Image (cartoon, rainbow, N blue to C red):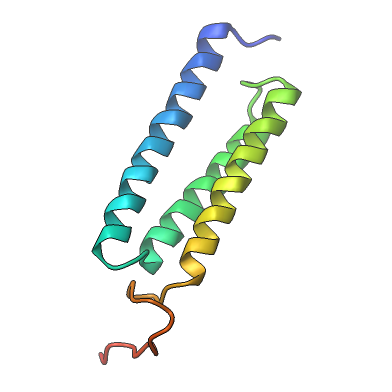
Length: 102
């Protein structure tokens, strides 16, 4: 059973809307001091869920699923690289990380 054009457009609008929100969050966090661990975890978890929905749903044709997977993987990779250069509290990785005492 085919999926209608409206459904496909709705999914794409949700993906772009979500990416816009993630982009704003990343920019605001980076302006503060760097990407915090929580931002990385949220983005990675969201992309993981979206990857699963992409493969499990019939909203996109096979070629569309492939390109959606490529785009989401690229987002995950970019966020992972950005997170690699900062400590969990958002400070640069050039500075030694000292965990807050509990």
